[in-house]
Figure (spheres, rainbow, N blue to C red):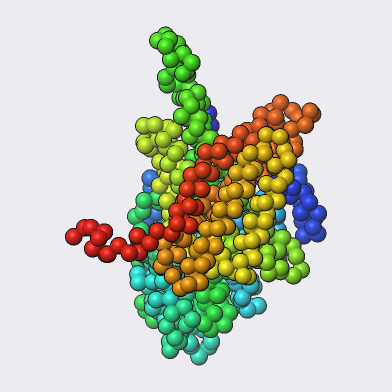
Length: 604
Ligand SMILES: Cc1cc2nc3c(=O)[nH]c(=O)nc-3n(C[C@H](O)[C@H](O)[C@H](O)COP(=O)(O)OP(=O)(O)OC[C@H]3O[C@@H](n4cnc5c(N)ncnc54)[C@H](O)[C@@H]3O)c2cc1C
């Protein structure tokens, strides 16, 4: 069976049935889109991903990238899919027309990216990563900067990066030492070294625009003194043509656990004293500006985790339908009974349904949150602060939960394949290795958890969190009136109530200044909130499916909808009790991890 990457029927269910996106298409900004055009775009993304991108996934893993004389060469096989994505204007699919994009509804672009990422994430990254820089320039750049860079980046003619990390400034960005000195012509000379820079140098674009965090000489230490500069690899003439090579160079590429086709570069700036950049926004506003891009990147990382999980699940599912091993349990006493596909074994079925539940729950969560931001920031004349806070509340959970659970799902996928899953004959092991990065870059798990508990939960006096609980309760109230959903609705209601208590317990500790005691439980709390979101999304799916199960439903759809209801039942009956235990531990608030003496950890 051919490898599938994303279940398109499932995506269509989320977009058209669960989220009822057709209503949104009535907005004037989407007058060129209707359900039919959106469906066509998504099918085309699937074709491209399966036929052109997926075949390069293991090649990227085997060949990696090569650095020679300051030039990074990507595998030859990457060139064709890169050009196809560029020519097809896929990087600009969900970018507004004023930035050179096609202005498609966000979920359509998300679906395309889910496919491309599951097909070979580095290719998607080489074509799409620049969008973050383009958004930032569009929002904070001068007229000249916008005209010079935005459209060239969103078309993937030029690449875009983000240069934050330094050897002694990782999670602690404020510790950076890269400096900037103002020149007489208003430009800045940049000096410093950055590490771990994705796409810092490669051969797929004719130029690369680097947003660089640096401190103007004399500005205060810490994040408050940081500014941001646009540093092109090749300086750009006033008429937009390429000029002299700028003094920013790749000095090394990392040899990594996964995503080996992605160039992770060490960069040096100003070795010859000639690295020129222009200020983006105002001096000392670097962190505020970069946060816009980092938030985008964090959402993208969550989608990356979901995409790997989706690919890994479908790979395991197909394998389980084909691999013959053992007899059916009903024939356990018959020695001559025929062998059956492993999907018939209860433990394999449990594993597959667990994977499906997480993939479906995470997909609904991601697509739903995307629309919160889209409605509030793109389709409304005025931003609603509560909706902004609601979207912000979801960002660290998307980033961390989809990364962590995406990886867990990949591991389960390897298990379904048995020994074959541990070999390079299948993509299961590559998905697992590639996925691990998601919980490390763009702010590690611990940093996301601190952001959630330290900043987002209490934002607007906790109103966003209260809205979250209220929205869950609206779904449970509806589900309680539906035959077959009453019990699981009650379980989700109880889960949300307990999560609320855990949030209260952490808030109390923070209020009392017991920061360490609170942060020791911040990541388990984030994961419990993610589980709650998945439970809610699956219940919502079950409600939608139940509504569709009329007498007129076609057999194929009936099986699909019934699958939604069974998935919700499975997750809420088997995973939610575990989450309840995790929440109880957060509320109990053990301080052992804080109290233990450093020497008590053991070692030398
Ligand atoms: C493949 C790859 C691509 C990358 N791409 C880019 C890029 O394009 N641009 C860029 O600028 N950077 C990039 N990075 C860097 C990445 O963002 C950092 O590695 C990451 O932020 C963590 O920093 P660090 O590696 O220095 O780890 P550290 O900061 O040393 O963290 C080590 C551990 O300590 C924990 N920790 C650290 N500080 C705290 C704290 N205050 N509270 C609680 N826990 C803490 C962390 O959670 C982590 O578990 C990339 C990294 C990799 C591996």
